Length: 434
Image (cartoon, rainbow, N blue to C red):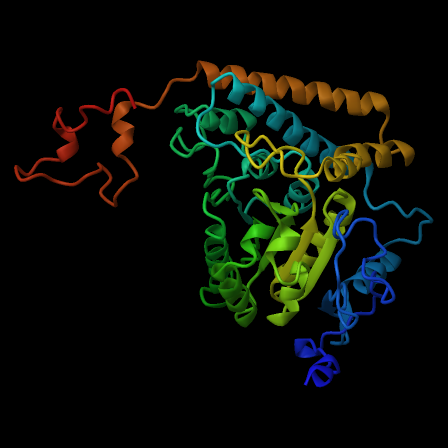
């Protein structure tokens, strides 16, 4: 029985074929890449295909994403330059990543000074993922985040002062101080929320993608909007994740599922928590491309994001992208971060995505040290101004506690006397010190 099982071949649905060679050396039990799987040993089946990335070419044949990218580049220019970005694009990426890093570092300072309350989860180290995807989106495209949502909000265009004020619990925050660190939201920027419970945002993102297709195909609107759902490795064994992958593939929804695999779900190693650590494999199981990419390299993330977003806009359906990245701080600012191996942390710190982009820009003459210093100075000023603005902003009025709780806009309904209960002065007694 055992020998029969071992001889069984594994097939991927929809005749997906990859033209790329696996990065795994079959003769060894660990990948040849120094990136995949961190410093841990990771066994991968010899029959697995590492990058099943596909799109339909003009002839209708299914080809690997990497081949499609090469084909597009060869047609776009006969120049000898192999640069992946222009100077303007490079500076935009650098500014966005530096903004995320400096903002989060300032959040840590403010938290320890008692300016922020509750749990605060920082994004340090993962900037390449947010920047690589979100800076390719339009204003009308939607983003759904997790409790680690500050930088997603910034990348989507929410002003730093609005995000900082929200963290301070002030009325000038993007949610008027009612959302806090884990619940950033901005209708204006189509940021559909940070969500405290893992997996909670994926159905919301799937619904947003469904609305885009419904508007285009049923209401005959000119709608090419896509949705990007960000979530972590700890979410990928949850039921909502699988249900939404199935729904998105079934209806060919314009959504990109982005797994920010930072290898740890609080204090649980990803390699200990799942039967197959290769999350991207779950994509082909539902009939959609699954991609694994170095989430510490913004340019690699950006190339994969281009293709995935393009597929969604063309009506070719969803993509699952696993970005292997790493957080440089503990799970939250309340986490002493004593469970992770110091050698592992040092390994990923040496692959800082901002340092890597800075090196790429200077070595390829896309930016000078002066250019980058000017950006860093500008961001320092933006973040300092955001803190001053948040600190000076008023706290929400006490009456706001009763808003956005029930459908009734005034709060807790009508009392026996026919008047709004919230208008009774005694109704809010005891809330003044909350």
